[in-house]
Length: 290
Image (cartoon, rainbow, N blue to C red; front, side):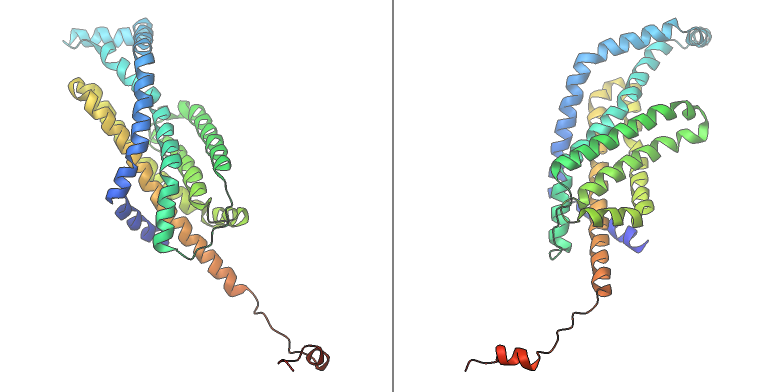
C-alpha cells in the first residue's frame, strides 16, 4: 500500500509539470484529428440512421407521444446524438489509450527512470513491435468483453462496475507492459505481473473510473449544443490526461517494484568465495614478477 500511494502522488506531481503537459498535446492532437475526420465522414449518416431506428420503434413512439401531451417534444432529436456519442465513446477511449501508450509512455518512463532509478539496468525485455502486438491483442480482448457484457448493463449495479473494470484491465495490461518494456527482462516482467497483479489492476480500475468524467462532459455537450464544439475537445483532452496520469503512475510503481525485486534477489544470492591458491598454483603463478 505504501508503494501504491507513493507512486500515485509522484505521478500526480509529474502530470502537473509543464513538460508532461506539452507531451499530452501530441496524443490530444492525434485523437482530435482522427475524431474530427471520422465525425465529418460518418456523423450525419449515423445520426440519420439512429433517428430512423428510434422513429420506427413502437416504444420510443409511445414515450414520445406521451411526452408531447405534457408539452415536451423532440425526444428523438435529443436521444439520437446521445446514442451516437455513447456508441463511439469506446473507440475514442481506445484511441486515447493507444496514442498515450505510443507517444507518452516511453518518454514518461525514461523521465522517471532518469530521476529516480538512474542505476537501474535496462534489460530490454520488450520491443516496440512486441508492445504494439500486446496492446492490440489486449484491446481486442477488452472490446470483446465489453460487447459480451452489454446485456448485463441493464442490471443497475453492474453498469457502474463492468465498464470501468474492463477499461481498468486494458489500462493495466498496456501501461504496465510499456513501463517495464525497456528495463525488465521477460522473466522479471512475468514475475512482477504475478506478484502485483491485483494492485496493478486496482490502478487501472481507479483510472477507469476517472475516465468517466469526460463522458459527463460529452453528455453536457449534447445538452448545451452551443458549447458542444468546446466541450468535446475538452473531453478528449481529459481522456488523454487521465491516461497520462495512469502512465506515470504505472512507471513509478513498476520501476520501484522492479528495483525491489532485484534488490531482493541480490540479497538471496550466495556470496562468492574465492579459493586460496594452492602451492602448485603459486609455483606456476607467483604473486610477483621474478
